[in-house]
Image (tube, rainbow, N blue to C red):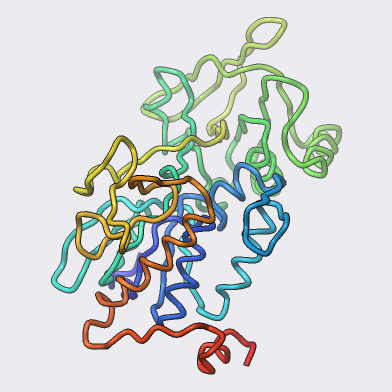
Length: 341
């Protein structure tokens, strides 16, 4: 972690479609952006929950999948060179002399005149293992995310889960692990067919063990695992290991944002519909996380909200400048920036 804070114009919390389009609208006005997201890639719900699901209500795009929309947005914002900070959560918000300081779970510190919360329905957080003893092992021998591959070199690892994350990390860590096994409650896996095929090949080669069942107990001392108890159709077995990587999917939570002093309505942030500013000056909320009379939870609505937000955010980033609104079709500077001049 750098001792110096990252200084930028906008810190955008959330890298889903609305957060990505906020980069575009801010970029048109000359604002630089850093984005923070719990996930390991851009796209939010579109990429994580329905990458193949068709979307029909994006203007001028009759149909596209969630992933195609994310890919097109990434192409659209590329000229503005945003910086992404994945696998970390925005945890603290503090008022400073010239704006706000945001600190993430990874210890990254940002200072910016304005902050945009585009966190969808909240932050994606891992579903934790539903065992009373699990918390005593977390972050020592039980993990829900992999932040550094090298941390697991030589370990005796049991991967729990049957989706893409479970198999992706199983295959990624296979060359590094001392021993490797996977446990899933059934024989069928939800992951990509290619990943399943590769996994089964490693099982046949004797490089990975597979258990069909569920983890029902953890054994160890002082947070250090010695073995896992697994209930399978025949009964219960004991699998020796020193590390469990549990990938049980994600759930949505408002998370630390709930403690930022924002005016909330349930789990949503109240905003001024003229600017999409919250009750905290210079802090904005757009997309599904914000609420106001007549709110529609549509990606289309979120795009509209970012346009209005960016004009108000400009006044915090450049208080000495006068904002001159220009259509992208009439500004040669903008057309050059976008590569269409």
